[in-house]
Length: 216
Ligand SMILES: [Fe+2]
Image (cartoon, rainbow, N blue to C red):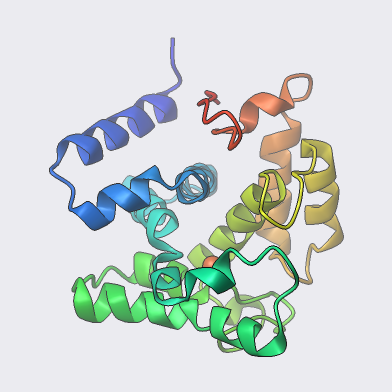
């Protein structure tokens, strides 16, 4: 018997996949990282007690958060070596570029989706981008997305890194608690992970190597 939120997630997925998505949306939904971020955002939203509509908006924010990368040259995004300062400055434009696409091209007005996209690289200590917002000046939904984004990045193979073990990712989250990450969201998410002691690897929604879906 599936838990209630798993059933909700299935319904969301089925509706979205059935609902005649645009070409752009179907590309985004095939992006495993975005789907994982979306799922973690959704789970954290549920754990906080957000309304279902806001959890769904968080999910969509996770799907769309990196849409601005479509404006960044592929050579930069797939560069296996360290980026130059100039290249990094270009990459840092993607949250604002994404916001502009969502707001002005696609006409999306949902505040949660827009905030996740615009602010997901802000840091709790104010050293993030694009604005250098500090602490709770960054909307909570974006602080949630920052944790979800970093966790999936750490536990996935990337062109520039081999994925970390789950426990290593937890150590990293804790290490950067209150610096990169919101302490409240970090504690909540780490609790969600560590409560599954014994079979923690099952928390990973999607193994990015095999593409195999794993159920929470
Ligand atoms: Fe991003």
